[in-house]
Amino acid sequence: MTSPSPSKPVSSEDIVAQKYDRCLADLLVKSGIGFSVGVVASVILFRRRAWPVALSTGFGAGAAYADCDRSFNPARIPGVRVLQQQPQPPPESK
Image (tube, rainbow, N blue to C red; front, top):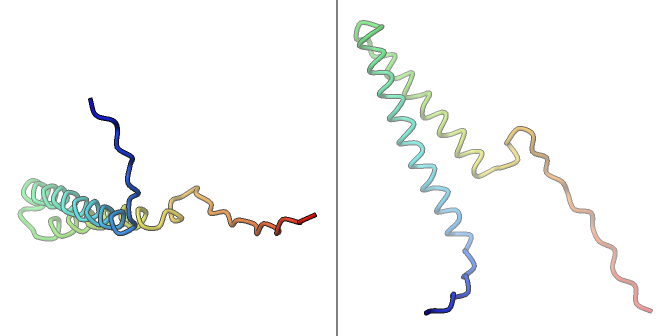
């Protein structure tokens, strides 16, 4: 039986790298889904025009950008308020 090892603090570089990785994966997935929807819409509805593919791919990339922006700047999430801390007075010595 092994004892649980103490958890190491996560460096800020690792946190930023994880956020970038998540953003890149989200961009690929959402752009890919948008591309797929655009191809289907182009074939079925718009007689094989190119603009539905470009438009839906752009929508997917825009949604991924918005999610990534919220990941790096949580103050942009609707309903979130950032409160400033009041400076603490120095303790008085007797």
